[in-house]
Image (cartoon, rainbow over all chains, first blue to last red):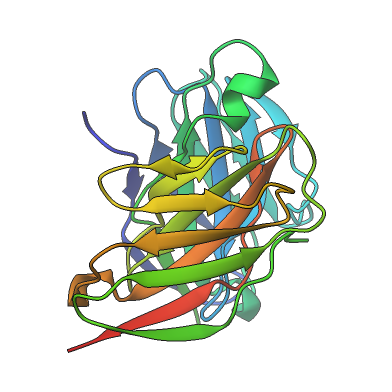
Length: 120
Length: 109
């Protein structure tokens, strides 16, 4: 079974430029997450999708970050304009959701390798 | 905010059992305890999870106290490749994994 695919693997941009990251979850996985991991810290949840709908985006800086999952499969995360403090690894994860929240809480999430963003 | 507390670092001798503690005193009745680990430059890797019973798989064992306020991840025979950051996570509705700072486990020869 293929894992969560992310691209690009690395990206270097100047501040105030825009950037986009792509994620293809494991086939059949309805729940998709985007995390931001700053060096030396644990991953921080940015947004959670259930199919193509947003479940939680309370930690997403909406003035500059946006995410979409139009067909309920792959997803893109965009930053525009980027700031120096956006330098981080952006991780995508997915989970298969059965019926009911209880099933989701009892199902492991799988992470991709991440995209390392450097803003200079 | 993370609902777990872990020691920042631990050492373990190669071949010995590594016991990683975690406190989660505010856990709710339907919330699961998950463990992930992260090796440098890789995404977090799932290890094990449980609700209230002890769990074991090919990687590790998870011991959860009866009151569910703490747990211990056991790697029975640590190897150098087990050196990583280990995250204890309480998974909350609607399925969020809220990471803390984790424990850096250093396995030494």
